[in-house]
Structures are given as C-alpha cells and as structure tokens.
Length: 244
Image (cartoon, rainbow, N blue to C red; front, side, top):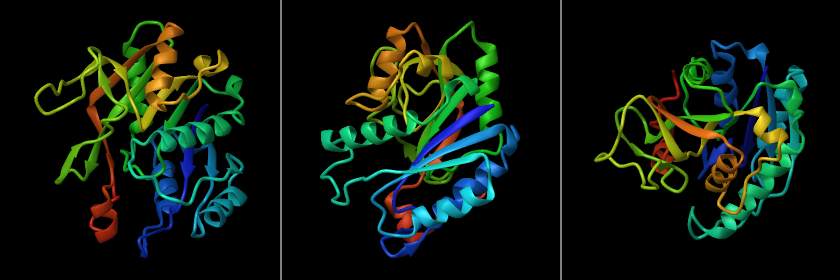
C-alpha cells in the first residue's frame, strides 16, 4: 500500500472560473495503473472560499480509502510564492497532515500537490525508478513543468536543486535518473524516513530533503517523467488540458 498526501484550498473556483480540481485530482488517481484500491488518500483542506471541503467530503463518504481533515489556512494572499510566511504556513499544515498518517501501513508516501496533471502510470514509473536504485531509503521525484506539453517552463525553482545546488535550466537539463539535492511538488518517499521523524521545515521541501539526507537518504529525479503544474494563465483562461 502507498499513502498519497495532498493539501487543498480553493480547488473548485479560481478567479471566478470553475476549475473542479478536486474532481480532476481523483479522476487522475482512479486511472493510476498501480490501482486505486492500493492507495490510501490523506487530504487536508483549509481556508477555502468555495466548496472544496464539501466536495472532498463527498469523495470520502463514497470511499473507505480516503481520510479527510480540516485546518485553517490564511485567506490573505502573500506577496510572493517564496515568502517566508507562505513557507511557514505550508510546512505547518503539511506536518499536521503527516501527523495523521499511520506510516507502518505503507511502503511509501507520495506527497503531491493537488492541482498537478500527472500520467496514469506515474506511481508505477516512480516505483520502477526505485527498483533500479540501491538499497534506500530514497526520495524519488518526477520533473515538474509549468503549463502544458505545448507551452511550458521548468517549475519549482524554489524547491528543486541539482546535486551541486544549482537550479535546473534549459542549459543544464539532464536526462534519465539523476541524484539531486532536493525536489518539490511531487515525490515518492520511503515511509521509513517518516517513521524516523522526517518532516517539513521552514523551507518546505528544501528542508525536508536536507533532513532526509542527514538520515542517510538519497534523493533522485527521473528527468524522463514529466508532470505539469498549471500556471495562473492556464487556469484563468481554462486552456489547460487535464486529459492524460
């Protein structure tokens, strides 16, 4: 079994556009070739101005493999996505969600942002990467691009670092499975790390990866597996295609 952990806020409406991201999240998860019944979902919502929590509650009522929790997220937007206040809040809520997970039940934890577009075989791809590596524990992540296949740029510059600490750019973009310093947005994490106390810190994924390395873990990215994060323009204009 694998546990999938995600946070949700204002996932139904974006700038007056109906986006139904809760439905799209579960539609993608139900298509996973790994098997929906082999996944337990831990979802937390807070601070939404729309009906995100009620929509999540409907999925929980229909599925025994969904656990739903509520927290309070600030409704006031921050000045920047890399603002320290935002990192502090994200880490606090993320760690609150992790406090509910029964790590002994799962081989891995997939931490994933709730608005990503992913392949139907994402879990199988990440597990296949894991099987190619030496004994763990490991953290393995796909590459996150901003936009769609046709219009995209590398995303997650605040959380993704190559082994030498540099950011990924078109100039140094590698291929295959490479060891890196940190990842973000989406990662398959050996559950033994969480049993040892792995948690998000004041720099969110950067801090989590730093702590994991101190526990003896290695972090890898599969540069051949790409997932997509919608830009504000994508969502606001509704031209992003979520079909896999």
